[in-house]
Length: 459
Image (cartoon, rainbow, N blue to C red; front, side):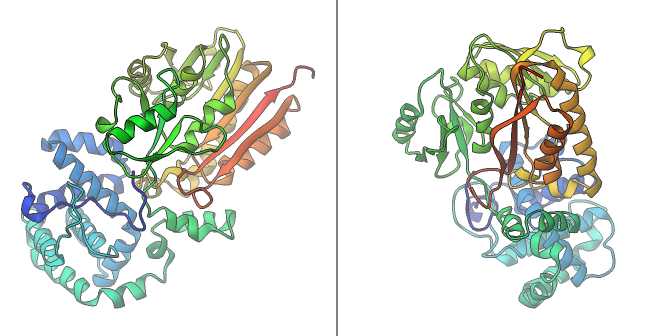
């Protein structure tokens, strides 16, 4: 994915468009409605695509517009409240208005959606297409006049309206108030920068399969295809390549042959920190979709058990290993905390606990997360993480290593969790690990946390 100052759907030329914009606006509004009802984009998109018989272009357009809208949803909600203080009914009409307002209030213009062209949709086109989108549903036809009036007022008074609404954190940072407060408390010097960085597209980072070859060989292969990348010199990222611009995975040379995977740089630290060797017995406790499992097996021939509580997600582990031509791990669908249901009594030399978390560190890639989470989720997740640590620690052999990881920036799921674990276990020794990784310090990386524990051989 591309990193830019502002993020918006990839543009397409209006003259080249085959699908009218109002259909994409309606599709994006339906996706927004799913998120506002508590569903993730990842689950809503395939379901709506099947129901609406969307092709690849339609699905891509709906997702691109939805990403843009969700990145600016707080601003759009504040603008709609300023334009029309009374609640808009039905919800389908409100969602359509939020989509149009979010796009109209993007700094620098409004883009279309299907190619790499820089052509902008003129604002009057977006307004007219939003009005046409109202006519697609009986529930929203009556709102055509209201949509037209509100959007044209926004167009005329945008600067004054923005100046007013951006005084509130919800509109300024496009995160729920509780999220802003947590970030302010955790990172007094850089919280605002962290929240602003979420509006940027994250880098698209590759992991070259060490069983295929080294990254210099793949870097040369990329160049033959007109693609350019940077090889970071950070320890632990010896197989990473950061693309200078995003490309479809199908365009990556030898992707289907297993030469390379797409994996954020922060996630790539896990395998080197775990440091599994040939013949070791390894547990990947929350393994789906299998990126870290694969990375471990790219580096060593292990006896690896991969667990996940979700059967459909667990299937993806096997698919990932098969594409990469890796030895198959033993894949089990089970709750890692319920060890009696899956453990055979033999200790593990290495355990990776990539624990369920708020995913607050990967909001750039998943802009719906901030709107799906609730403040109370953080303490509940921290309790679940602690329970997993307590359940898995007895399964580690003396001298073994347990790597605790979350894709979170909240201290309750990171440093505080690790410190509490050490207080409970005097047989645990903290080893060197990155700790909290923040995009404000490494913009090309997702927010992540790592703690590495060794079990003392004498206690």
